[in-house]
Image 1: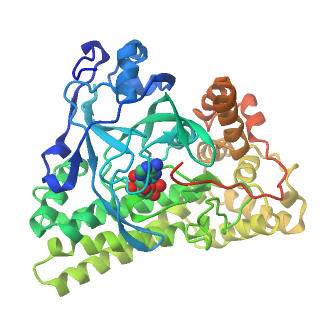
Image 2: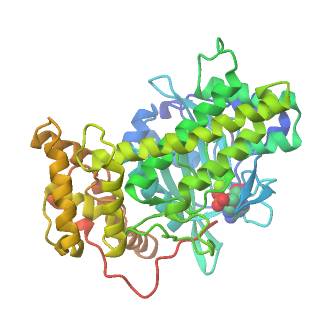
Length: 491
Ligand code: AMP
Ligand code: MG
């Protein structure tokens, strides 16, 4: 095995700007080679967007790069250092099983991180083996691509390669490497790491690097670090509102899993809620529901307060002033989030303009859904296509009363019925990655090496606002079982 052997035709146009940051920010090391890499899935549209040749990626050399066995020209492999509050407790973390190759310059001139996940031990692995298994990497692939298709900012999945090695979890599992794409892997935890163990100059270097990557053109701002803080807060408010609007539960909103770019990252124990319940939790380790569906906005605000603390030395020379500035920025999160959320809810109900009583109308619907355990996605979907038969909630007198309110509300706006319908169609997905569908796809892939179930699922999920006949098959809800659906970390 020799470096820089990858054929140029693959289209790699890599460099690693992170490697030019202070040495303490990362550890430079190569992925650990794997025994016999085999390409399981490759994202064709994303390959094209990245300027990569599908044929070249499928070739032995291409797969060898996706497995970490060859390093493409221009890459500078490294593991990023970061810290984080895990369930409220501060820890030193870092990429324990991921290697950042660098940033690919796309044909449109974007620069996107290329990271291999499951690529061996690093100085930050602590007790872990640095590896990942096939099922969970395919799960991240399916859910991150579904999120992207739903119009929610997210890291993307380029490929999953199986390694030909067995990994010890509860049972022996096939090993895999996921190639993950993100606009960066800068986290709240990256700032926490530098704030805790670095100098103020290093913190400034990190903040300047972040501004340059995500918020270019701020040089003229009076206080660019206040701008950074406010923008990060705004992007998170928008992101979390989108999660809530589709019923996505991230499951492990530790500060190290919150991206500065405002993208959803680190898909672990996440899943979509079926019946509407604020207390929905899937993660096996979230015993007290810290990261329950209904808590996500509060947790985001808590994480952002941790972020604000890290940048205090940059905000103002006088720390009392700096704290005031940070507090006023953080206080805006709740209003910002509520506005994004209510705007999204109005759209889900076909409402174009604003009326004071919209909030209470929306809350009435949600509380009926909670009371009657109505499926979140299918309720909005039925309202969209105006088929109000199959769901128990629709048969109640409470709903009949609510429907009158809603209909009267729609009549008070000037838009036509068809534009109302169109607005609802674009904001209520016909389908989400249902837990039983995802499990069925993973089981066929991992146990039978049959990838067709996953491919069909990915196909329907790529167009969630289509509302086609074919999709209705995928929106069926399974009868609630005695055993709740459970998800896991570090798999
Ligand atoms: P997360 O699940 O994203 O919250 O991961 C928390 C930390 O554990 C990160 O530093 C990961 O890199 C690390 N980690 C998770 N799984 C492994 C593993 N199998 N080997 C080494 N580190 C791991
Ligand atoms: Mg993580």
